[in-house]
Length: 284
Ligand code: AMP
Ligand code: ZN
Ligand code: FE
Ligand code: FE
Image 1 (cartoon, rainbow, N blue to C red):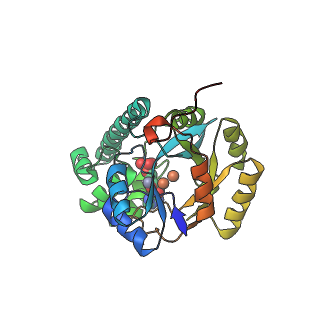
Image 2 (cartoon, helix red, strand yellow; image 1 turned 90 degrees about the horizontal axis):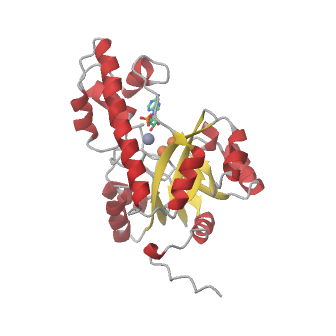
Image 3 (cartoon, rainbow, N blue to C red; image 1 turned 120 degrees about the vertical axis):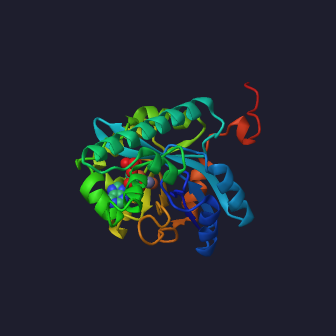
């Protein structure tokens, strides 16, 4: 049995609907999934229903963009309470910042004589958590670029003329927010950080796990991060980071987390009354 704990839908920058993603997961014989859209949990209700239809275990998640001492890192929150007020307030704030960022990217493109309209990007994105891939798709759809690669390469990549930095919350604050919402905090794709020095301070800040298995990790890199996870007493997780068809072939099914790691993650979930957990015994 296997799990995939890093997936995106069209509630952020993936292309699959939750139902399509669950169908793909069934085809790849995955037994558990987590949805980790950027800055939103809105797709989770539909994903949960679709997974139930396929007898797939489902975990609510989200991916947060964070920083520690000016180094960017992504944090995955798992088993989040989707009704948690301060979580929803923070997510709404980051969604609004993302929308402002789209307007700023479009304004920069306009100054480069590319008459793209922000509303075209928003219409195409059709979600509250739009990102650069939506701008790239709108550039292709408008005939301004031939491909997504060209759109990123010419305009949207870091330090290209339409690139706008993304708002990041402090990693310690993100971990605290995830914990506050009843969840577990996992550092996403550490291999993409090129900075293993982030792991110790994050473990110190309460990080629960490390995404050792990921599309962009070689077998050797996965082994390396499993070793570091053990060293820092972190749970081992993994996922494909599938964005549907936006990056060529869909990645779901290419990274499979052995189920024992998923079971250990579940054991660590703090019980909360709203999750249907039994009330703790009275003190004394
Ligand atoms: P954002 O969160 O708006 O900064 O967008 C990040 C998304 O853009 C992630 O899903 C990345 O994988 C994707 N992305 C970043 N660079 C590229 C690129 N050069 N080509 C295609 N997608 C990219
Ligand atoms: Zn993404
Ligand atoms: Fe990420
Ligand atoms: Fe991701």
